[in-house]
Length: 406
Image (cartoon, rainbow, N blue to C red):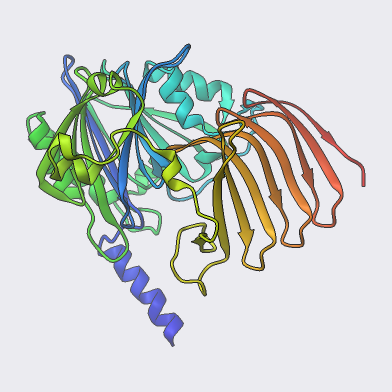
């Protein structure tokens, strides 16, 4: 009986418009100016923005997210991207045998792409497994726009029709079903509402925040943790936090990149004067755990304060020789689960050796990351301790696979 009531409640919540970790992203251009609005909807988090200045061969960029996890970005060339969960999940096998890029391709977009066509070319060349559960909306300062994802094992690119486009959480290829109720129509109502308002309102920052207000979430399942409006021509970024659209703070990406690598908590930006904002410099050392301190993690690898709910615990230390951060994860029986090295914890950038173990203590995976991309030999073992395969990568690109006979 409890089970039936739970299912009925879930259906009612979905039909009533309660969105599961929902997001809304939309853009509009008049040929001279291009604006992008975005609601990031999730469970309550202390959201951040990170600024990473240009380096040799890499553009400077800003990233938005929380807990070291990156959700959206904008670079100095006026290119914006945002990743959205996409329902229904789909197959995303590499049947076209594109180069298999191992690592966080989203950083690569911000560092190397200047236009929407650059991003499309990247995914025509590289395979990214993340499209199985997500779609990516990209916009550049010229007003070009595309929603990129996979559908039926094929890369699909949907460009705007007219001067605007809206993206939510149902897979864009299922748009023909958006008028009817399906379990995967998460976000269809928000999409229609945003499209209607874009067609009715003048393209201004204030009106974009009106659309964000009308489509933001505040329910038991998901809440809007931050909202942004980006002017891709000027580099101005307008920010509100936790669905409070009465407090909006403006920053400029060029001005921030000139300050060097740094980060802000978004809540500080909208509440405090600029001189009172915490963590203007990124201090990775504050994430280190003391000798008797651990971070508890549940089965979904989310932090918890309840030991009964924890499946893993984590310790973070710093290697004085390499200056890298070492993250060690353990099963609750004190067996080592994994070891990974980072050049940055905020945002997270894997850089060095990477090890994963079975709960039995046998090794499962061993390899190396170079600036968040898989590099060199990666070895994979079965649970009984036998080496299964060796995969070679160079700068994230798979070079060869060797299977070891049993």
